[in-house]
Every structure is written in C-alpha cells, then in structure tokens.
View 1 (cartoon, rainbow, N blue to C red):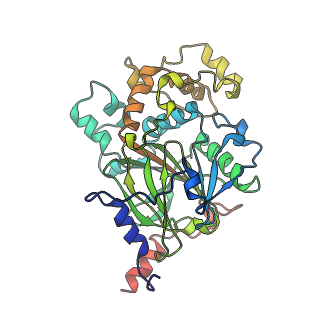
View 2 (view 1 turned 90 degrees about the vertical axis):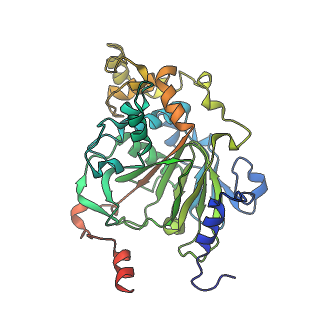
View 3 (view 1 turned 45 degrees about the vertical axis):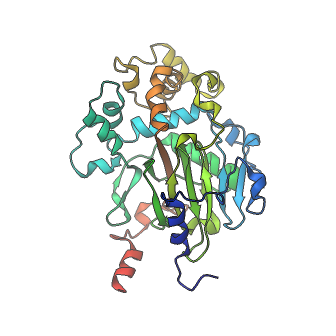
Length: 382
C-alpha cells in the first residue's frame, strides 16, 4: 500500500530509466507477446466503417487494438499504417512540419538554417548542420503551445495540417465510434534520441479535457508509462514500437504518463520486415489517391521541384492537392527515403495530437489564461 501522497509514479519512472545497473524490463507489457499479459489487457475490435477507406490505413479488420485493464480508456493500436502512409508522415514530421510558420525549440533565436532537415540530412552537410538537426526536439502545429507559460496562445496559431487531422479523426472514430467527432486543433511533434526521456505529466492545458489525446510513434521503440490521475497509483509500463498509436480517452485522458527510456533498434530479436525497401508495395496507395491529383502530377515529373540530390528533395505537401501524390511517389524512391530511414534507426518521433475546444465552440468563446492555472496554484500555495 502506498502512503498518502507518496510519488509511486516517479519511483517506477526512475527504476525504468536507470542505466547502471541496467533497468529490469521484465514487467514491461509487450503487445507482440500479449499472451503473457492477459490479466493486463483486453482485446478490442474497432468498429469504424470508414477508417479502412482512408488513404494508407490498413483495414480496421486487421488492426490489433488493446485496452489497459488498469487504466480504462488507454487504448494501444499496433501500427495501423501501411508502409506508404508511415513513410509519408515520417517525411512530413522531418522535412515539412519544422518549417515556419510552425514553431520549434530552435526558434528561441534566429535560425542558423531555415530548412532544418534539408540542411542536416544531406550527405555533404557539414558537422554544424548535422548537429543543428540533432538539436531539434519539438515542433508545434495549429495552436502553438507556450512552454514557458504552459498554455496555448490564442494569437499564435496557423492552419493545422489537414492530412494529419483527417487521419487521426478516422483512427479515433474507428476505435471510439463515429459519434466521437474528434477535431485536431493542436499538435506537438517530439523528437527523441537514445539519451532522451520525458518525465511524468498530464496534458491539462486544453479547454476540452473530455476529447481524447492521440499519440503516434515512429522510429525507435520506447518504454511508455501510464498511471492514474494522481502519482500514488502504480503505473503500467509497455513497449511502443514504430507505427503504434496510443489513444488516451475517458478516465485515461487525465492520467499521468511518461517515457522513461528510448530503446535501440535491435533491442527486439525480430526485426520489422517493413524496414527494408524491398517490402514496399508500390500499389498500396493507387486506389486511394484523388484521380484529379494523379492526372495533374502525370503532366510533369514528380520530383521536378526537388534539388539535385535526392536526399535533399523539397516539395510542398497538402492532402487535398497533387503534392500529396508527389510525396507518395517519392517515398518509393530508395535514395529519397534513405536519410529518413537512417534517422529512424537513431531516433524516435512522437506525434501528439489534441483537440482544444469543446464541440460547437471556437477560440473566441473562451477566456484564455496567460499562465498555467495549476502552476499558479502551486506557486501561490508555497
């Protein structure tokens, strides 16, 4: 039994983060071996009828989705993406989302390289450019989060990527039902390396705390922890792999969660077949791309907007334009994909997508705080 107020969450976090001696990971839930954890998880069946028609998502009948019994509302989907959509969003996260007017941790001073990925991924990039790319830790989309004040800013906002919004909406509705009209209005893209971790916290800055949180992982696996709405509850730890999706809904929406450890690629003996270019099905997206977009793109080379070296190609992307088709065609190219794959072998990308406003409400309907109310309460009480 935990003492009242005892920080059990932090105790487990430190134990899993430990490097010397190595952390004991035997209790970490492995959804690739769910039979060993039948008392911890419950298999759920997605019922959405539209999700399998979404570009790049596997049919929902093929999804493996589980709910944590100790944390109702915490749902994990084992990689519902086709290889093409997986590659598409990895490219977006690295080459598109860090572009201004989106905001990154590198914007605290004038950017040394305006195009962060394009400068750092080229084989001929100098050491300074590569180090600059390595320093990229986060990017915010839509309504931007102020990390100093711990609040969103009403004035600091730009259009949310429609492709990411549509994809997350389909995933949520497939799992939680079509009545869950999730609308993505803000996102944080986190970039982790092997020495990275994220301490225990709750996401409580949104105006609608009933709407679910959606977290998507790409690249290196990690240990993810989720507990209760206080730190006195023993958390559940589980592995998240490339392509996995976590939905925090219901009671889990305000649960403490953390990432104590990012793991090397070869930590699991069975390597994913999708990591090899030969496993890519070039016909995966054919029937789902807008025909108008495909016709437009066929009039010119898909890569005519790119620089001479394929690893530094640049294109403007939008799911509603022919540029979506351009990127889908380009990720088939081995040379184009190679620097992205190299990055994934050394790093983890986490897309954290949120709905800010209650259904039917807009930004003008709220009184926006200037600092985190929880932070003010703690400050005034000490």
